[in-house]
Structure formats: C-alpha cells, structure tokens
Amino acid sequence: MKIITLGNTGIQTAELGFGAMYLPRVSFKKAEHIIKRALELGITYFDTAAAYQDSEEKLGSALASAPVSVVIASRSMAYKMGVDAFRQEFEQSLRRLRRERIDFYGFHAVNQPPDLAKVLAGPLDFLREQQEQGKVRHIAITGHNPVTLREALQRGAFAMAMFPFNVIEQEPLHGLFDTAREKGVATSIMKPLAGGVLEHKALALRFFFSFCAGVITPGMALVEEVEKNVHIFEERRQLTASEQQQLEEEAAALGKEFCRRCSYCMPCEQGIMIPFVHMIHMKCWGKPMDDEVAYTLQLGKRMLPALEQCTACGKCVEKCPYNIPTPQRVRELVGLLKSASDSPHFP
Image 1 (cartoon, helix red, strand yellow):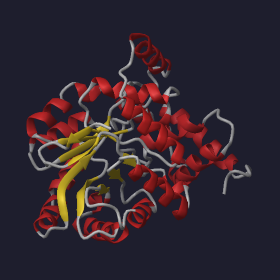
Image 2 (cartoon, helix red, strand yellow):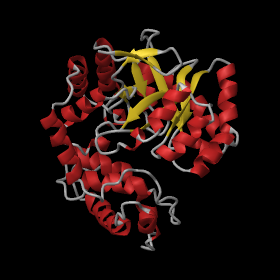
Image 3 (cartoon, helix red, strand yellow):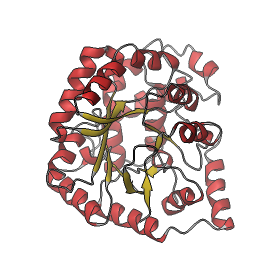
Image 4 (cartoon, helix red, strand yellow):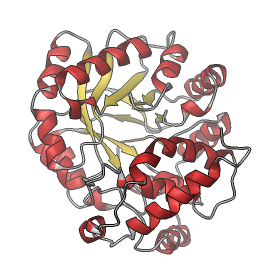
C-alpha cells in the first residue's frame, strides 16, 4: 500500500487506516484476529475513541506486542464537561490502550463554535501538559463542520484534523484541505463510505485515489472487510468516467434529505442528538430486522427518553440547510425503537 506522511509530524503510515468504531460488535478473541490480520496486511494506523464502548480495550489488547511503527489515535468528548472530566477520560484511554504514550489524542465532535470554545477553555492546555510529559505525541481535533474545523486549524494548535469526506460530503474541498496543507496539519478521513449508506463500497473507496486526502479510516469488524479494503488500496485503481458517474448517481439518489452531520441543527432544546437520529433512521427505517439493524438500534436505545420529549417545535428544520424533516423522523424512530424489542435479533 501507498505510504504517506501525516502532515508535519514526520509520522509515516499506510494510506489505509483501521477505524475501530465497530469493534464493540465482536468478541475480544475475534477483534484480536481482525486487528492482527490488519497488521499482517500492512495497516499501521488505528483510530478509536473513548466513546466507542470497549474498542480501546480491544485495540490495547491486540496491539500490546505490535511493532513500534503502529500509530494509535483516540479522542474524547468529555471536554464538554470540563477539564476534570476530560482528564479522567484521557487517563482511562491510556489504561485501556495499554500505552504510556498515545500518538494522537484529541477532541471528539468539535462541531460548533461553542464546542471549540470549550476545548480552548482548559482542556487544550491540559493536553499540552500531557504532551510535555511525553504522554501524548500530537494533539488532534475531529468534527463534522468544516467551518469550525478551519477556524480551529487557523490557531495552529492541532497536528491532526479528522473529518468526514466522501463522494456525498465534499465540503472539505472548499477550504478545509487547503487550510490543513497551509498549516502542515495531518488529515484523517472518517466516514469514507458515508456512514455505510453507499452501496458500491469499492467504488466509494477508489474515489479517494483522485485526492491527497490523508489516511482513510473505514470502520471494519470483519477479516473479510480488512482483506477487501487492503486489496483495493494495493491496486489503487482510479475511477473510470463511468464509475465516477455511477457513484455520483448513487449520491444524488440519496436526495437533499440526506443528513451531512454538519450539526447546524444543534443544540436541541430537548437534548436530542439530531445527527445521530438521522444516522439511525437511514440505516434502520424500512429495513428488515437483522443483526446489523439490531446493533444500530441498540446504540440508539439510550436516546429513547430524550426522543420522547420532542415537541416537534420545528426549529431544527429551520436551521437545517437541507430542510430535513427531523420531527417526522424522530416520531418514526420512537416507534421503531419501541417495536424492536419484539424482534429475536434485538437484545
């Protein structure tokens, strides 16, 4: 696979990274098998987050004896609750990952200016202290809003930025990539398959061969996924004109009501995580109940109390650039979550 350098850090890694978001779906034994297969095939960059249930622990266990060339990135949303909460989650990440130093550690879901303000209010200084103590190699930031991330990168405090980029979400091409290059900031791509909604996954990954996008980190929870993805990145065949058109037609078929997770609709007065609502709705609404749908609904189950408080005020629709009918989808999701308990697939 192609080897790239991550911004000005000097760290080199394979262009294809391993996203660990879906590792909670599998056992520790199976996770170890998947991760070690990824290592065998040349994957050296592993991305996780404190919020991804036990994925840090599974990575830590499987990579305990891995070569020093392995790069691990993790992040926390606890900065939203202040420095003490962020410190606790950072120390937890060190323990779970079995590391004395994490290569990239940073801030998860910095989507709006108030989020960035919370990062700058103290948690950033804390991570700088950890960097001086040798517990963090580089500081990272992640988010879904290119405007907020560009503002963050202008400050010169971050060595890596992680954000969505795919055939549907091409907003980073309008300034964010340029700013990252100007500042020497490494870029890591989340949601390369648009959250799994793209049917032609091989074409969706080959889309990136027309760009210098950084390390591409699709979520993987099967050995077969790892092997297929590695094969695509080893061949590195660019899309033909007809394949590009096929991808664009698939993206267009999703329509204007596809959630780009820009978070302009947030915050919700009832505390509903609206982008998460749309992600679950897209993956589950109208789909037959199977293990994939059941797993996604299980993730969303904790949202049910907040969803039931929705007043259908419509403010989210007014703020959404795409006028997505969020209240309607909330009602549909509430019904789906309540009825899912009757399925043998649903724990």
